[in-house]
Length: 602
Ligand SMILES: Cc1cc2nc3c(=O)[nH]c(=O)nc-3n(C[C@H](O)[C@H](O)[C@H](O)COP(=O)(O)O)c2cc1C
Image 1 (spheres, protein in one colour):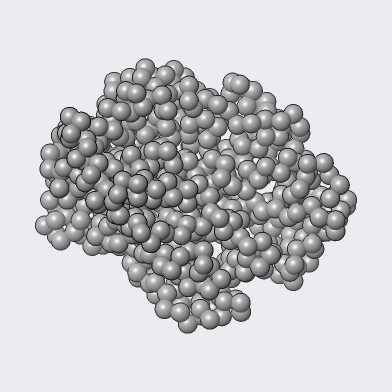
Image 2: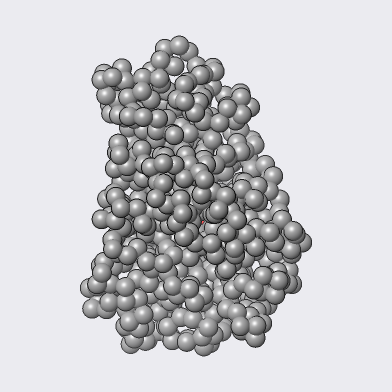
């Protein structure tokens, strides 16, 4: 199927052009939702207990993130999974212990065109940074931290998360220039993350009766004191240098600089993507390479910034990589430029690590180097390549594109299980000794280190998995126009939504929808959490945009009144009102909600 047919597959959708703003749920609402879902469905934010990670007591998957202990080496990369409180909680339940939080920047009223995520095959997006105002982002991160503190001590969850879920780290992300990052707004965000006592205390009052035992809990107040600088495209080297120094000097942070794949140079990138991996339809934006950091200056800068940090008793690291800037040939998303992620980026970022390891001997904190520059990673990590990528010495492996595929956050725990199995079967019981054995094997096979061995594999026999031919399969389709009630009940809209904006209600007899063919579940949208990113539309097998077609519920009257799309408002007392919805449909929505014990939204 071509992109044209993808568009025609979804005739109901016209790109909205501008973003639907997000209205986060309050801490009280989120806790009420947790309590209600647990009682009625044994799930938390739609994640079933089978997808909650419980560490294996015999295998230690922990690592140190810039000196801070983290119980697992995976987590969400800055993006849609690390923006709202429930997203971060879902990641934590799946086993994430390192969270690269969504990038915060001074331009917090950006209009992001929609749809903005296209994970149909590899991964593309046109997103920028946070879609919330800066103070709202701080509140989301504080709520997420409090929810994790509560859940790790919540009796009903104990048997699912294991005796000790272990420590986790929130890593801030800011962008994109010194002026913005040194503004009072961003400075106050960083200060708030370093000491969130006031925010935490203000939120205590929202903790509902069912969780009253936590109202006086000693919550984490130092939410984060590390930061990954998102340099994005076109951030000049001098700016990267001054921002990093500013973050160290003004805020006393340990800093990671997230680098771009452009560091490899246009010829190498184009030859890997187009020739070696066969993505002939991807047109890398050559003109962007000249503005980005060049390799030689990059290696100098990495050494200089590490020295600068060490002299001030701070730690420094690099992250490989941000997305690759390409021409928007598909024209499904409404911008000229889009950002590529997923499988091809995995080959690029691994190649970059190998090249940096060669150019900076003994400097990186990877096997065989023994240096002190930590290397974090985000590029096409999946269950299949997680162990091989981690064996290179990267800490941690963060994920974005893979979590946007069906299964969503439920894909995390299987990644950790596969990694545990690999470490266990090698005879090791922790990541360090397992990596040491992998390093020995790489040297025995004639490579300088594991990174070199892995890249030789990726660009040789292993290239097939990253080649276009392994990554061009389109999501499944059925010939049926999506309607408000009834569908194939595949659940994809729930799992591919990073915000958990969808939920389902069984089509039982008292809903009046039990006779619908193939419709075991009815799906509803929590409108305030939906930013119309387009990901559910990509994966829905039927024709239509689930975010627009399924019943759109609101809990905030102001937001409800401000929208001109059809929807149903659920008032605090559970009373329903609607606009743009016919009487019969309203009646069915009412019956569906009534079939739930209590108000699912608090
Ligand atoms: C929809 C989307 C939004 C993203 N937003 C950010 C962001 O705000 N800040 C950032 O540094 N990187 C952002 N990224 C890049 C990811 O953090 C990650 O580096 C990249 O996608 C590569 O990882 P992946 O192949 O697992 O997706 C975003 C990526 C996607 C797909």
